[in-house]
Length: 313
View (spheres, rainbow, N blue to C red):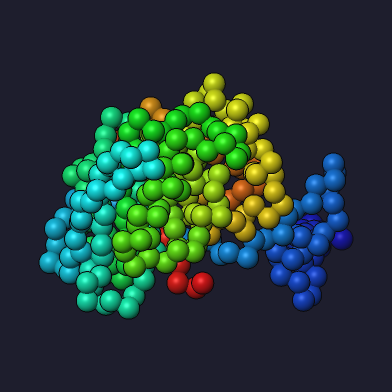
């Protein structure tokens, strides 16, 4: 047998091994294959498809949050009273057409600020209203309500035990959600609620959103993650939840982690995301330029708003 014949035979054998049997897709072939060494078997693919995230805008790009000549929504500054009797302020973005299309109900993004900030920062520095106006006008984001509460002095960087809600989660469930659903035309199913937050606000995503997947369907973490001394508690307290066999079905979108390459939260973000990966939970992992700053957080919002609340429900 000549050398060229031996090469051709080897290539044919390699292709026959790599291809699934007739009538099988590559996914079902992997799922139905025999366990590998150690008893490993690939999990079945989740039913929810994973969208392609759009590329982040360039760091110098300001057009995506400019006040462009497009239909504009509006931002309301409202007051609500907590169960403890405290008056609190909240910024609420209403999309273009909210006042005129009175039969329409909207999904809600609960968007959380960072430490030392308040409910005004996502509009004053994040330009949330401009980002959403431009995306909605371009048909790249679904019209949504954005609730931006003030969670200062409520948020904890400690992962709670399941069933033992922290103060921030209690205010969300008792006061913030009921206020929004009671005053605006919202869709109240879990698939129509997302929670996102930057830095300390990322703990709202993890401590509140993750522990109440019956309430929130999508979770987005910007420049955040548990500190090293809290990771063991996260693994222990959340272990039974993260180990559920159907856990990926409970996330409408893969949980999102966005962080900058010089971000002070870089290692916290990566180590926290690794816990999800260890449990086979789907994640969006976005590593951007720059650090712990609004330049990044605006870009993360622009990116994630385009995959929130898919229409195929």
